[in-house]
Length: 170
Image (cartoon, rainbow, N blue to C red; front, side, top):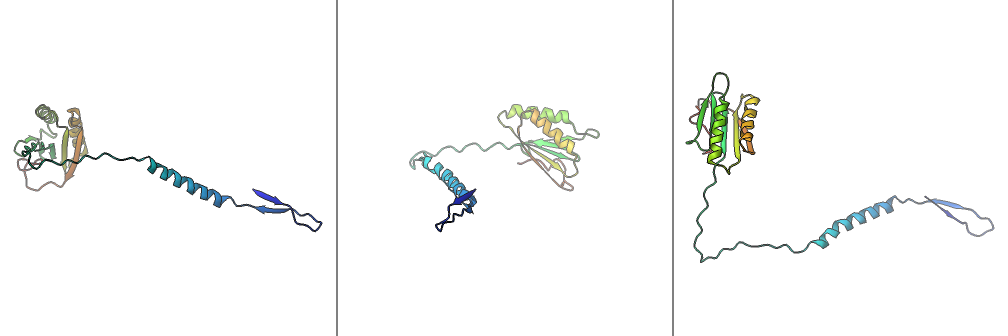
């Protein structure tokens, strides 16, 4: 954008042409608009209602809640699968030929689902060296039975430990 100015006196008129740099002006307006938009939000915030949970010191003590049910754990190992919620209540499924007994594992998942209908969490643990397809098969079974919260884990197998001594969280 240019600016044309008429020259001074002296009989001769000369047109002066000056270039105006509008970039700093646009930058200033951009910063001002951004600042105004950011601060406009603060004018609309009102008070937040906060309730404090203060109990009466003279009230009778409340019965403690029942401890949470541990999640169903499926531990896939080289020599079989351990499945259960606690070490004592878990079951071992030995290898049947060259593959795991997925039908029996699915049946145990059905039994667990009937026992704990509200629980939807499952932990699938695989030892190192277990093929990916076995973990996916366990994941497919758990999803089909309604366990939609899944935690996947893995790591090295405990050397010299049998399925009877290793299991889920206890």
